[in-house]
Length: 310
Image (cartoon, rainbow, N blue to C red; front, side, top):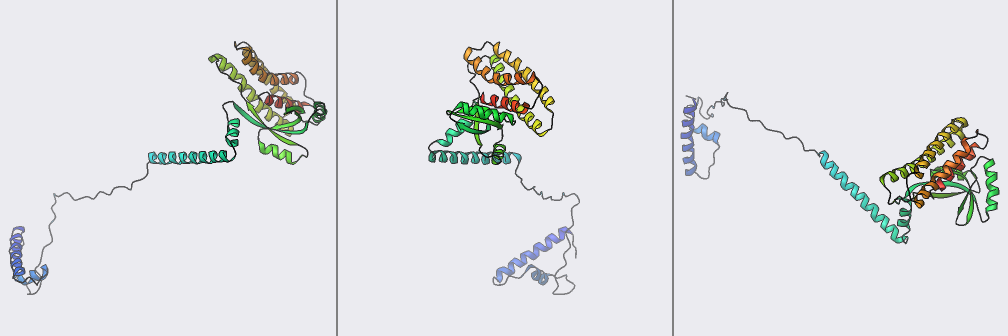
């Protein structure tokens, strides 16, 4: 039997034609292609066996079909940023709803507190350890003198007509609460510092005023650190004394700049009232050697600097 492609094509064409005629004659019979092929095969070596079929010959010039496997799509950086943005907006929205609801139930107290604490003139918050609340200043003065002898500040602070003796100040409320828990008869006063107004100033005047304020705020932080280090014995009073001297000289230059900046009288006085208590307190300390009152004097200057922002 010739198995050339031309012969096989015509051979199976004739067989398919005869099979079609048989199916038309017997519509109820649907023989499989294999059995039909065997019954019509005249050249089979054994009757009843299917005709041999050669395997297809591959074309060496054909290009094999390639199936492209697409990589799994992953969320890009842009989609992650979009999701993060919506999460942030949702958190802010929830916070706003909670704040407004709380404010409605509290009669406006919440928003008033937020405005008071985080207004544009907000300069910081500190916590005074105080005793007293005396109606007479003379009583407070006697208590302040005794407090200074023990190393406390002994600063007299007037609030709502009551005189308090400030013993110490802390920038962290937890530190103040810890000290209060260990000492009977003391209270905590929360002090919010406010910046003076600097409207209608030239660029140079604004720079001079901001420099003076930033210098005082930096000195407050330095005083906290020096007081803590001297109290714990980390540095000697002489080392702290030298740093206080440098702070005093910087304030002197800032004070001269304020005076020569051409500010109007109310504005100039507002800034000098902040810088003078710190400068004056340091000036009284640095031109004498440190003594047993050195810690109390530094605490006094620190509290005076904070109160000046009130």
